[in-house]
Length: 456
Image (cartoon, helix red, strand yellow):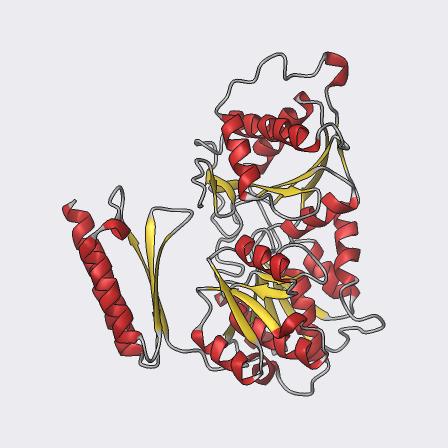
């Protein structure tokens, strides 16, 4: 049974900074509520320790301090680590034997937004069940009985070597005794959380590095840089004659790659590359890759030729990770660039995935354009339609139009229509062998949704 959540979306709580629910008082309440649920779940058997990290958004200062106040008010000690990639928080939560990790970030969203992501003591994102418990607590009044006495409030301190720990953790995923000497790499840090660590890791592994998007000012995260805006990276790679470019997003849990010709390589191609490499090394668990329903049908068809199964999940990297844990698979991800390599980490990590790609390039005498374009994607069209208070997937006419489109694509492609988990839009995606036909099918569905939503 699907649980309805009031505050948590597909990846934590998210919204416009300094507007509900991303206000300081809400962050305080969320932290206090999470602490109450945590204590209840652990039955007193806990370290009373929480790690809090953030990306480079201006509002991170406000939310970080509010959450630290909330946790310490409930008797938990707080370790503040400052700007660090989301996977760094997953790693540090385990490494520091903390009960919980918190990442303050809105990932690839613009600086005006911010969000709160929780990790459990095991480094995995909290389950839906725990998020529902925290939500229920948020809506309750916290009583004096739940507050610890004055001598049991928590304290907060900063961990000065957090980024150094993360750098060494990432480097350990790279083959021992190997370097990136001779490989020319442009790295785009999106003016985000990896602006220090990603270039440093590549430099320490002896790559020739040019860095862009590494001058955050609190307002320029993801602004024309990073995994969702790769034009500057594509231009830089070509203009400098470099071998490859890597783009991370604001919290560095996504990776998009650019080849020496300036061509953008998405998460589907990277998964295909890593899957074949892992299978050849007998390292791909159960010869299976986990991806979402958004991954291109071309990926699935290519993997079939390699005797590799593609297991699809709902959209969201947390669904990918859950399926990987349940089935004991070790490679998964999303077309958007979330790539999960569970032999090394518990969540998507753009920098870690980049090292695996660069290792393959280093071993080859071919240009990156030949290595990275693993399969030919089927034409794919995705459009977003705003629907307001209208409920498009409960409308009979729209459902009939979707069914009609699905039948039209049945033999050569597929259609996917879903509500966004982060904004009031419905996403209409189709793919097939004929680009023009796919576009017409998507347009027909979108036009009907727009028409009926305006009339409602």
